[in-house]
Image (tube, rainbow, N blue to C red):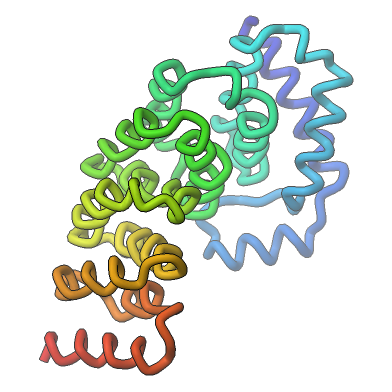
Length: 252
C-alpha cells in the first residue's frame, strides 16, 4: 500500500478521535504527563471501540496481515498519545498472534531507534499490551530478545527490556533472566530505568518475597528511596520502613 493511502486512512481515524475528544481529559493527561506528549482527550476503551468500527468499515482485514501491520505501525509516527495507543491496540487486538518475534522485533526496534516512543505512558502500554503478551505467547525466545535491550543507550528501549515481564511474574523460570536485566537497569542513572526494577520487584513479591529481599541485599546501594518503596510495597509497612532507613544510612 502506498504511503499516501496509509496517510488518508490514518487521517480518517484521527477525525474519529477528534470527534469524541474531551478537553477535560486532554488537559488532565497532559498535566499528569507534565506536557511531554500532546493528547487529544480520548480514553483507551473508546479508542478500541472506534478502531474496531473503523477497521470493519474500511475492510482492512481483507488487505492481509503485512499491509495491516504497516498501517498499525504508521500510527506510531503521529504526535498524539492516542494515535500511538491506537497502534498498540491494533497490534494487540488484531496482529500480534499472526506474527512471530523474528518478524516483529526489527519493526519494534525501529520504534525506539527513531524515538517514536519517548514517554513512560506509551512505553508502558506497549510493554503490557504487546511485548508482555508476546512473552506469554512465544516464550523464552521472545523474552531473551527483549532482555538484550537492557544495554540499549536509549532509555525507553532499555526500560522495555524489563517491564513486559510483569506478565510472567508468577513463572519462576523467568526470574534468572529478570534478575540479569534488573541488575543492569538499577545501576543506570535514569529514574525510569530504576523505577522499572521497582515495579517488577513489587509484582514478584506477591509470589516470592525471598527473591525480592535477596536482590535488595545485593543491589541496595543503587536504589533510590522511590524504588525501594515500590519494591517493598507488598512486604508490609515496617519492612518497607526498615529498607528505606537502611538505604538512608548508606548515604550518610
